[in-house]
Amino acid sequence: MKPNLWVVAVLSAIAMPAFTKTLTWDGREFETVNVYASIVDFKGEKVMKIERDLKAFPFDKKIEVQTVDDRHFLKLKNFVFQDGIFEVKLLSRVQEPTPMTSSQGFIGMYFRVQEDNSAFESIYLRPNAGRSNVQRMRNHSVQYFAFPGYKFADLREEAPGLYETYADIGLDEWITMRIHVQGEKAELYLNDARFPSFIVNKMKGTSVFGTIGLYVDVGTVGYFKDFKVLHYMHPEVMVKDDI
Image (cartoon, helix red, strand yellow):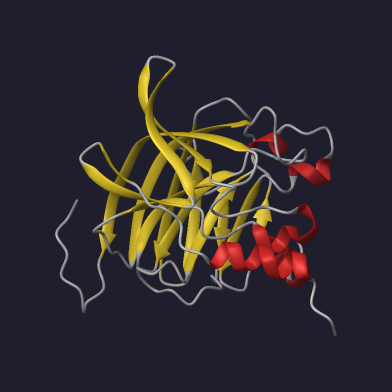
């Protein structure tokens, strides 16, 4: 079968290394991975602003699944954990103009990110879906995926409804997102709730340890503050200082 030259061109561009930038934020070092990131004044606070770099990592609606849920995030440097608890407050807006008319304000966290970014787990939010008038859209407010091999569309086909759920969240509001990771299980707590809003009983990824990333996807302007690692266990073979 003759290859689609546009798909080949886009995927080749994705494979090219992008310019990286290192930032110091609240005493920690972060590195950009196919995103723009800067510390800005926002509503009277100093926060981290992140947007996906579409030049470094192109998006194309015709091959949407191949060009979303991928390596575009702000990466915490010099940190490795296996199990742990971490949280951040985040707020998302849809870009104006937006390169994706159906953008839901995609924002969240990556974890157990490998040093070469070849594998990681993720839980992210679609705040614009949380207040939708259509229940089917509301059910997509929270999403889990694992890279590589288990993007949102793959998991929807494999087990509809198991790896996503509803949450009462919206655009342009601060949302506290806390993730508990232990073994194959991950739990998401939203807005200091006593009980988890979402549970992944058996994660799909191959990465058992790594670092943490702050994620946005196409059409999203993301703001982050109060990032914390509340507890963590490093792999037995590693020796790392606490942060």
